[in-house]
Length: 361
Image (cartoon, rainbow, N blue to C red; front, top):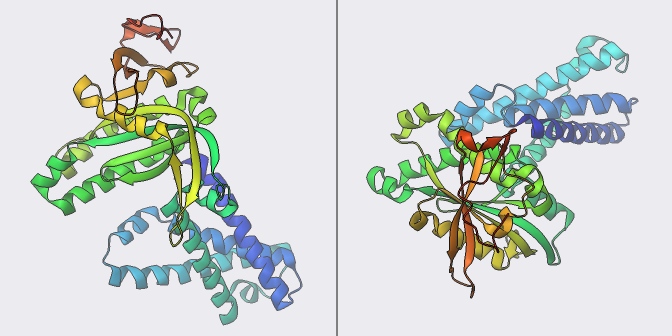
């Protein structure tokens, strides 16, 4: 988990645990609310820290690969152990602060009822965090707050990232091996997306849809910088990719943005969906990557709204193209590493500026 997200996450977990501890204190008519909050916060941080890979991360990663009949009892045993560790830490703190009368043993060793309550709260916490992971942070928060119960018109930026050659990989190695390959790719891109404050909205086959509220995606050209951060993350593990899968992943990427309608849809299964021409157009632009011969394309409209290009990145005019759903041709640029001669004062110039009057940046 990136540091930028780990701190707010841990703070939220600590507050949830403290609230649970306060609730137990009130129900049990105990004397110190502070003690209940400390116990609850310590237990929640220990259980959730392990579940998120922040505690014993290497063991937790290996554990997830074990068969389900082994994974479940071991995970349950670890939850009990971590609840006990959290209780000992919290009890020691309370005993040192004078919040827990009696001996250290009495303060640090839970009763069966206290342990059962801790495990119950831990189960609720783990369930909530896994649902959050399944839906995504922004979607989970939006569903909880009811932000899109009624359709909302807003402006968003979309990045469609398509894995090149995944079908051929599946034909050569089989579907199970291909799924492992895609799973590793999707895991690798998560950190760069979070670092650039984007949200992975959906996986469609071998394509990832990433989105930003427009103001957030434009700031510091995060939406464009994210593309190259993903490529850098993949390249940094080149040897690992070749060793595990025999090849390094390649992508086709498309960036576009504009006005869309966002709404919560579904009855049995709720989902935040986006409606409007912007999403379809982004898909059309991605389909141009192969015929144009470019790995990353950005619409001229979005490019001209960026405050600047990320350092070391150049935009090259690729002409107007007639895409499905548009009566008028649609202008696109390719994004690529800038040659050293194109850099001035740390900012990137636009090479090949054969733009015409309607596309001049």
